[in-house]
Length: 295
Image 1 (cartoon, rainbow, N blue to C red):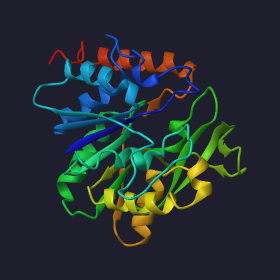
Image 2 (image 1 turned 45 degrees about the vertical axis):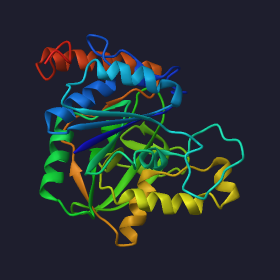
Image 3 (image 1 turned 90 degrees about the vertical axis):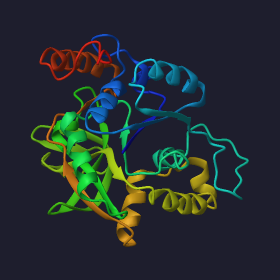
Protein backbone atom coordinates (compact mmCIF):
# COMPACT_ATOMS: atom_id res chain seq x y z
CA UNK A 1 0.00 0.00 0.00
CA UNK A 2 1.15 3.52 -0.82
CA UNK A 3 0.49 6.89 0.80
CA UNK A 4 0.57 9.84 -1.61
CA UNK A 5 0.86 13.28 0.00
CA UNK A 6 0.09 16.46 -1.94
CA UNK A 7 2.53 19.12 -0.78
CA UNK A 8 2.75 21.51 -3.74
CA UNK A 9 0.60 24.32 -2.32
CA UNK A 10 1.82 27.88 -1.82
CA UNK A 11 0.23 28.57 1.58
CA UNK A 12 -1.17 31.93 0.48
CA UNK A 13 -3.60 32.21 3.41
CA UNK A 14 -1.12 30.74 5.89
CA UNK A 15 1.64 33.20 5.04
CA UNK A 16 4.38 30.65 4.31
CA UNK A 17 4.89 27.04 3.20
CA UNK A 18 2.83 25.38 5.91
CA UNK A 19 3.86 21.91 4.69
CA UNK A 20 7.33 22.60 6.13
CA UNK A 21 6.31 24.32 9.36
CA UNK A 22 7.72 22.69 12.50
CA UNK A 23 4.48 21.93 14.31
CA UNK A 24 5.50 18.77 16.17
CA UNK A 25 7.04 18.66 19.68
CA UNK A 26 10.50 18.12 18.16
CA UNK A 27 9.98 20.28 15.09
CA UNK A 28 8.31 17.63 12.94
CA UNK A 29 6.26 18.64 9.91
CA UNK A 30 2.56 17.83 10.05
CA UNK A 31 2.97 15.44 7.12
CA UNK A 32 5.41 13.35 9.16
CA UNK A 33 2.60 12.36 11.52
CA UNK A 34 0.59 11.16 8.53
CA UNK A 35 3.54 9.07 7.37
CA UNK A 36 4.02 7.66 10.86
CA UNK A 37 0.35 6.65 11.10
CA UNK A 38 0.37 5.11 7.62
CA UNK A 39 3.56 3.11 8.21
CA UNK A 40 2.14 1.87 11.51
CA UNK A 41 -0.82 0.48 9.55
CA UNK A 42 1.17 -1.36 6.89
CA UNK A 43 1.90 1.26 4.24
CA UNK A 44 5.34 0.53 2.79
CA UNK A 45 5.66 3.25 0.16
CA UNK A 46 5.54 7.03 0.66
CA UNK A 47 5.14 9.38 -2.32
CA UNK A 48 5.27 13.15 -1.87
CA UNK A 49 4.26 15.55 -4.64
CA UNK A 50 5.80 18.99 -4.18
CA UNK A 51 7.25 21.92 -6.08
CA UNK A 52 10.44 21.42 -8.07
CA UNK A 53 12.45 23.74 -5.83
CA UNK A 54 11.52 21.71 -2.73
CA UNK A 55 12.27 18.19 -4.01
CA UNK A 56 15.89 17.87 -2.88
CA UNK A 57 15.29 19.43 0.52
CA UNK A 58 12.27 17.26 1.26
CA UNK A 59 13.91 14.06 0.03
CA UNK A 60 16.95 14.64 2.24
CA UNK A 61 14.78 15.56 5.22
CA UNK A 62 12.64 12.43 4.94
CA UNK A 63 15.41 9.99 4.02
CA UNK A 64 17.12 10.89 7.29
CA UNK A 65 13.96 10.07 9.25
CA UNK A 66 11.84 7.37 7.66
CA UNK A 67 12.59 3.69 8.37
CA UNK A 68 14.93 2.24 5.74
CA UNK A 69 12.35 -0.46 4.97
CA UNK A 70 9.96 2.20 3.59
CA UNK A 71 10.26 3.16 -0.07
CA UNK A 72 10.29 6.94 -0.66
CA UNK A 73 9.62 8.94 -3.82
CA UNK A 74 9.60 12.74 -3.85
CA UNK A 75 8.29 14.11 -7.16
CA UNK A 76 7.71 17.59 -8.54
CA UNK A 77 4.38 18.65 -10.02
CA UNK A 78 5.24 20.62 -13.12
CA UNK A 79 3.13 22.48 -15.65
CA UNK A 80 5.26 20.96 -18.40
CA UNK A 81 4.20 17.42 -17.43
CA UNK A 82 1.65 16.68 -20.16
CA UNK A 83 0.24 13.57 -21.86
CA UNK A 84 2.24 12.31 -24.84
CA UNK A 85 1.55 14.38 -27.94
CA UNK A 86 0.00 17.31 -26.05
CA UNK A 87 1.52 20.79 -25.90
CA UNK A 88 1.06 23.93 -23.80
CA UNK A 89 2.82 27.13 -24.77
CA UNK A 90 0.96 29.67 -22.64
CA UNK A 91 1.70 31.09 -19.20
CA UNK A 92 0.23 29.74 -16.02
CA UNK A 93 1.08 30.44 -12.37
CA UNK A 94 -0.88 27.66 -10.67
CA UNK A 95 -0.37 23.92 -11.18
CA UNK A 96 -2.98 21.89 -13.05
CA UNK A 97 -4.78 20.84 -9.87
CA UNK A 98 -5.02 17.95 -7.43
CA UNK A 99 -5.88 15.30 -10.03
CA UNK A 100 -2.79 16.28 -11.98
CA UNK A 101 -0.77 16.02 -8.74
CA UNK A 102 -1.96 12.42 -8.42
CA UNK A 103 -1.19 11.75 -12.10
CA UNK A 104 2.38 12.92 -11.44
CA UNK A 105 2.91 9.64 -9.56
CA UNK A 106 1.68 7.39 -12.40
CA UNK A 107 5.10 5.83 -13.02
CA UNK A 108 5.92 4.99 -9.38
CA UNK A 109 2.62 3.71 -7.94
CA UNK A 110 1.63 0.19 -8.91
CA UNK A 111 -0.64 -0.82 -6.01
CA UNK A 112 -3.64 0.55 -4.05
CA UNK A 113 -2.90 3.97 -2.60
CA UNK A 114 -4.32 6.71 -0.42
CA UNK A 115 -4.23 10.39 -1.35
CA UNK A 116 -4.08 13.08 1.35
CA UNK A 117 -3.23 16.74 1.81
CA UNK A 118 0.17 17.21 3.44
CA UNK A 119 -1.12 20.09 5.58
CA UNK A 120 -4.01 18.18 7.19
CA UNK A 121 -4.06 15.92 10.25
CA UNK A 122 -6.49 13.05 9.70
CA UNK A 123 -6.11 10.96 12.86
CA UNK A 124 -4.77 7.47 13.40
CA UNK A 125 -8.08 5.67 12.86
CA UNK A 126 -8.31 7.10 9.32
CA UNK A 127 -5.22 5.13 8.24
CA UNK A 128 -6.32 2.05 10.13
CA UNK A 129 -9.73 2.10 8.44
CA UNK A 130 -8.21 2.87 5.02
CA UNK A 131 -5.80 -0.07 5.30
CA UNK A 132 -8.66 -2.33 6.35
CA UNK A 133 -10.73 -1.22 3.34
CA UNK A 134 -7.86 -1.93 0.95
CA UNK A 135 -7.30 -5.40 2.41
CA UNK A 136 -11.00 -6.29 2.32
CA UNK A 137 -11.68 -4.85 -1.16
CA UNK A 138 -8.96 -6.06 -3.54
CA UNK A 139 -11.03 -5.32 -6.65
CA UNK A 140 -9.49 -2.78 -9.04
CA UNK A 141 -12.72 -0.75 -9.27
CA UNK A 142 -13.25 -0.39 -5.50
CA UNK A 143 -12.50 3.14 -4.34
CA UNK A 144 -13.37 4.99 -1.15
CA UNK A 145 -13.45 8.35 0.58
CA UNK A 146 -12.59 8.79 4.24
CA UNK A 147 -15.35 11.08 5.49
CA UNK A 148 -15.48 13.60 8.34
CA UNK A 149 -18.34 15.43 10.04
CA UNK A 150 -18.64 18.83 8.34
CA UNK A 151 -18.94 20.95 11.51
CA UNK A 152 -15.74 19.39 12.85
CA UNK A 153 -13.70 20.54 9.84
CA UNK A 154 -14.27 24.30 10.04
CA UNK A 155 -11.83 27.02 11.11
CA UNK A 156 -12.51 29.65 13.75
CA UNK A 157 -10.40 32.09 11.78
CA UNK A 158 -12.17 32.31 8.43
CA UNK A 159 -14.08 30.49 5.72
CA UNK A 160 -12.92 27.18 4.30
CA UNK A 161 -13.57 25.15 1.16
CA UNK A 162 -14.98 21.66 1.68
CA UNK A 163 -16.59 18.94 -0.38
CA UNK A 164 -20.01 18.24 1.09
CA UNK A 165 -20.94 14.59 0.48
CA UNK A 166 -24.21 13.06 -0.62
CA UNK A 167 -24.44 9.41 0.38
CA UNK A 168 -26.75 6.43 0.15
CA UNK A 169 -25.91 4.15 3.03
CA UNK A 170 -22.14 3.81 2.81
CA UNK A 171 -22.10 4.51 -0.95
CA UNK A 172 -20.86 7.89 -2.16
CA UNK A 173 -23.36 9.58 -4.50
CA UNK A 174 -21.64 12.93 -5.07
CA UNK A 175 -19.29 15.52 -3.62
CA UNK A 176 -20.50 19.12 -3.82
CA UNK A 177 -17.56 21.54 -3.63
CA UNK A 178 -18.32 24.63 -1.49
CA UNK A 179 -15.67 27.33 -1.30
CA UNK A 180 -16.68 29.62 1.58
CA UNK A 181 -18.12 27.62 4.45
CA UNK A 182 -18.43 29.17 7.90
CA UNK A 183 -20.26 28.42 11.13
CA UNK A 184 -23.19 30.82 11.56
CA UNK A 185 -25.05 30.09 14.76
CA UNK A 186 -26.24 26.50 14.63
CA UNK A 187 -25.83 26.31 10.84
CA UNK A 188 -22.93 26.00 8.43
CA UNK A 189 -23.39 28.52 5.61
CA UNK A 190 -21.70 28.78 2.24
CA UNK A 191 -21.19 32.50 1.60
CA UNK A 192 -20.94 31.99 -2.16
CA UNK A 193 -24.27 30.23 -2.71
CA UNK A 194 -26.16 31.02 0.50
CA UNK A 195 -26.78 27.30 1.04
CA UNK A 196 -27.17 26.18 4.64
CA UNK A 197 -26.12 22.88 6.19
CA UNK A 198 -26.82 21.36 9.58
CA UNK A 199 -23.13 20.63 10.04
CA UNK A 200 -23.76 16.91 10.51
CA UNK A 201 -23.19 16.14 6.83
CA UNK A 202 -20.13 14.19 5.80
CA UNK A 203 -17.31 16.24 4.31
CA UNK A 204 -14.44 15.28 2.04
CA UNK A 205 -11.03 16.35 3.28
CA UNK A 206 -9.32 14.89 0.19
CA UNK A 207 -8.50 11.55 1.81
CA UNK A 208 -9.16 9.21 -1.11
CA UNK A 209 -8.50 5.49 -1.42
CA UNK A 210 -7.59 4.86 -5.05
CA UNK A 211 -6.30 2.25 -7.49
CA UNK A 212 -3.81 2.67 -10.33
CA UNK A 213 -6.76 2.58 -12.75
CA UNK A 214 -7.35 6.26 -11.92
CA UNK A 215 -4.23 7.34 -13.82
CA UNK A 216 -5.71 6.50 -17.22
CA UNK A 217 -8.94 8.32 -16.40
CA UNK A 218 -7.04 11.44 -15.31
CA UNK A 219 -5.00 11.38 -18.51
CA UNK A 220 -8.14 11.20 -20.65
CA UNK A 221 -9.65 14.12 -18.70
CA UNK A 222 -6.42 16.07 -18.99
CA UNK A 223 -6.33 15.66 -22.77
CA UNK A 224 -9.87 17.03 -23.03
CA UNK A 225 -9.03 19.81 -20.58
CA UNK A 226 -6.05 20.97 -22.65
CA UNK A 227 -8.26 21.43 -25.70
CA UNK A 228 -10.46 23.98 -23.89
CA UNK A 229 -8.79 27.41 -24.08
CA UNK A 230 -10.74 28.83 -21.14
CA UNK A 231 -9.97 25.90 -18.83
CA UNK A 232 -6.31 26.05 -19.76
CA UNK A 233 -6.13 29.68 -18.60
CA UNK A 234 -7.65 29.33 -15.13
CA UNK A 235 -9.13 25.87 -14.63
CA UNK A 236 -7.86 22.93 -12.60
CA UNK A 237 -8.35 19.18 -12.54
CA UNK A 238 -9.77 18.00 -9.22
CA UNK A 239 -9.71 14.52 -7.69
CA UNK A 240 -13.39 14.61 -6.56
CA UNK A 241 -14.52 15.36 -10.11
CA UNK A 242 -12.41 12.54 -11.51
CA UNK A 243 -13.77 10.04 -8.98
CA UNK A 244 -17.34 11.21 -9.60
CA UNK A 245 -16.84 10.77 -13.34
CA UNK A 246 -15.61 7.23 -12.73
CA UNK A 247 -18.65 6.63 -10.53
CA UNK A 248 -21.03 7.99 -13.18
CA UNK A 249 -19.39 6.00 -15.99
CA UNK A 250 -19.50 2.78 -14.00
CA UNK A 251 -15.72 2.59 -13.74
CA UNK A 252 -15.64 2.67 -9.94
CA UNK A 253 -17.67 1.77 -6.88
CA UNK A 254 -17.03 4.36 -4.19
CA UNK A 255 -17.66 3.74 -0.51
CA UNK A 256 -17.48 6.23 2.36
CA UNK A 257 -15.21 5.06 5.16
CA UNK A 258 -15.76 6.86 8.50
CA UNK A 259 -12.66 8.49 9.94
CA UNK A 260 -13.67 7.99 13.59
CA UNK A 261 -11.13 10.60 14.62
CA UNK A 262 -10.69 14.36 14.86
CA UNK A 263 -9.38 16.24 11.83
CA UNK A 264 -7.49 19.51 12.04
CA UNK A 265 -5.58 21.58 9.55
CA UNK A 266 -3.58 24.77 9.16
CA UNK A 267 -5.45 26.90 6.64
CA UNK A 268 -4.69 30.17 8.41
CA UNK A 269 -1.64 31.28 10.39
CA UNK A 270 -3.86 31.53 13.47
CA UNK A 271 -4.61 27.78 13.16
CA UNK A 272 -0.98 27.07 14.02
CA UNK A 273 -1.36 27.42 17.79
CA UNK A 274 -4.19 24.88 17.85
CA UNK A 275 -2.22 22.42 15.73
CA UNK A 276 0.89 22.67 17.90
CA UNK A 277 -1.14 22.19 21.09
CA UNK A 278 -3.02 19.22 19.66
CA UNK A 279 0.15 17.40 18.55
CA UNK A 280 1.75 18.09 21.92
CA UNK A 281 -1.29 16.65 23.71
CA UNK A 282 -1.47 13.55 21.51
CA UNK A 283 2.22 12.93 22.14
CA UNK A 284 1.77 13.37 25.90
CA UNK A 285 -1.12 10.86 25.78
CA UNK A 286 1.17 8.29 24.16
CA UNK A 287 -0.33 8.29 20.67
CA UNK A 288 3.07 9.34 19.30
CA UNK A 289 6.62 8.89 20.50
CA UNK A 290 9.04 11.79 20.67
CA UNK A 291 11.13 12.37 18.69
CA UNK A 292 8.70 10.87 16.19
CA UNK A 293 11.28 8.79 14.31
CA UNK A 294 13.15 7.36 17.30
CA UNK A 295 11.44 4.01 16.75
